[in-house]
Length: 114
Length: 112
Image (cartoon, rainbow over all chains, first blue to last red; front, side, top):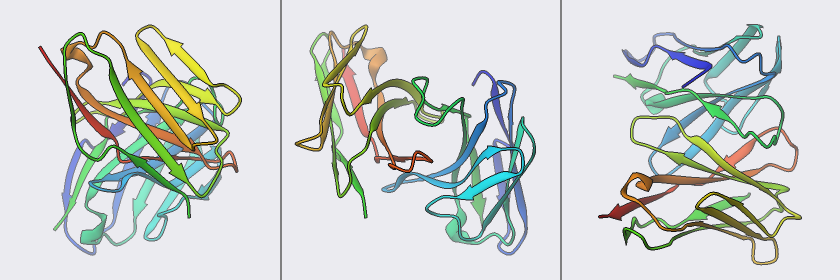
């Protein structure tokens, strides 16, 4: 997706290992979000950021941490991966909360914890 | 807690017909409602936003209505085409302005 990239696209990891997913934007948008998408649950917000070093929790933040040291990068870390964290993770950006432009999503990272 | 419901069953319609998708919500009053399209293996793509004081919004072949009394939004695609086949998600703001809550989506297939 233009202006936002996620890496890696796919990852398989073992239970108990740390994992970091990266979201990079070139749009200079203030807000960045991490969502997970699971069958039957839709997209659920994990954490979001409203500026450099400014982050807050979403509805499913347990087991996850985030960091934003630069406007363009938002990292999601699973400190000790569990099988329940197997999911597709999406990063999103927006220029303003509730803006007319909506969110721009990345292509997602498919994470499998074995 | 707030709950968002979209048609859980897949919707199949004939090309050229109007597709109507439903988004119902309970337990809160969002100020904004968004609709997204998602194709397999891809992230959602923003289509339309409608505010609580707007009854209807249009964009090309798309029309969205927002009935705050019924707590419902309808999403219409007129003159549907096979290329419209995708999953459509609705999302409602949290009232705190910090996030949107997403429904699970409705899968639409337009049959040629």
